[in-house]
Image (cartoon, rainbow, N blue to C red; front, side, top):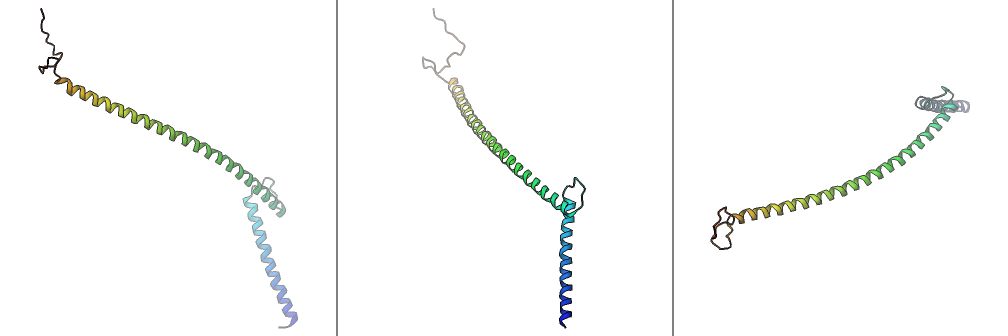
Length: 138
């Protein structure tokens, strides 16, 4: 292979590499043109790139606002969950107190029912007090 032929081959290879590079750049710019909102309808490569940069800045600003909003919402939600958890615990405590009070009352009622039937009177004769029969005293 001669020097001229080698130089020509080298130039041809370089041209092909450069053609592929430009093709890839153009494909990327065209893709940006398709996905970036286009208010002006301009198809120039510089305009597409400029719109893409503006759109990326817009997206980043929206993301920052959303993160701030979601952080605040999460903080408020966590606070509400804590308040609800405290209310739930208070309700459970009150429920337990009511249940224990009811059990005590039922136990006391059973004691009164069970003891009232066979409680001896003051005379100790084993008759129930207040059995409806009064003795006459003259």
